[in-house]
Image (cartoon, rainbow, N blue to C red):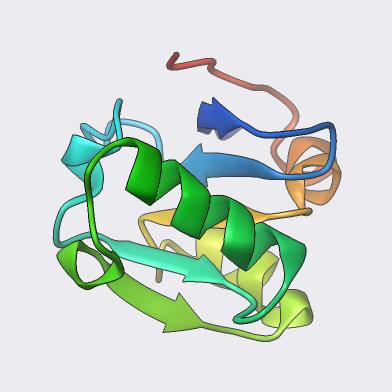
Length: 102
């Protein structure tokens, strides 16, 4: 069984999920972390908005533009620290439990 945290719930489809025990519990704790999203998508704009509202430019994180189909496998393999995407249902089904961080 695996867990993941949700630190930004923008809508039912767009949330920022983080690896368990990553120490990520706020926008500021994303600094220098690998964060995946589909560049130009609604999720990407949600990420940009989340960072901006918290006084962070995109270059404060290691942004990884990925295809939507690649994000969940990358998250499960821990190739990324966080993902901002409409993938939570897929992750929830695969990981079987959720740890809500914030």
